[in-house]
Amino acid sequence: MKRLTFVIALFCLSASLVLAADPPHALEATWGTQGVAAFEAARAAGKDLNGMPEAVTIKLKVDAKKNKVSGEIDQMNAGMKLDVKDGKLSDKTFTFVTDVRASNGSTVKINWKGELQDENTVVLNRIGADGAVTAKLVFQRMAKK
Image (tube, rainbow, N blue to C red; front, side, top):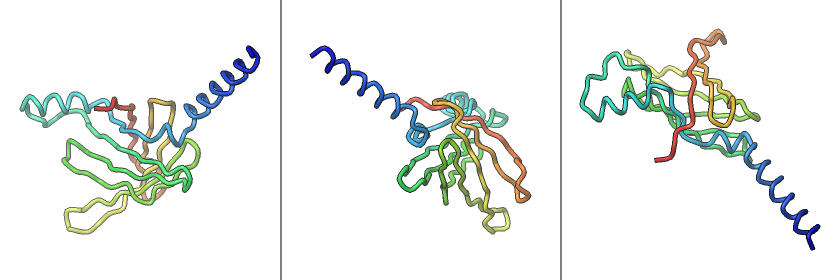
């Protein structure tokens, strides 16, 4: 009986470790840059928001069966929300596109490539037309509100 209990406990532990380490599911969360907390506090206090550190959140949803990522980016400093489109997922890396309205009214597609560094960190790179990284953002997992 003790042996059966041990085997069941070992199986449950193994299953929980596999689920906890599953990169696609670990990616599904709300992520924020370091500037989010200060921006939200200043906004709540009615303070001037000019010159604040960059505050960006990204809410990611994962469809692991289809290897797809969707969600929304909130560029808080700019007051702009962007939909995550054409998201693709491969293990710990993902790519997607956002559409930004230019000042002349045209739509510009922005390519992004991200990686889940660990269970609490995502690095997201903005990719230029030449394939070079034009901006790098580091996100931390945000606590659920």
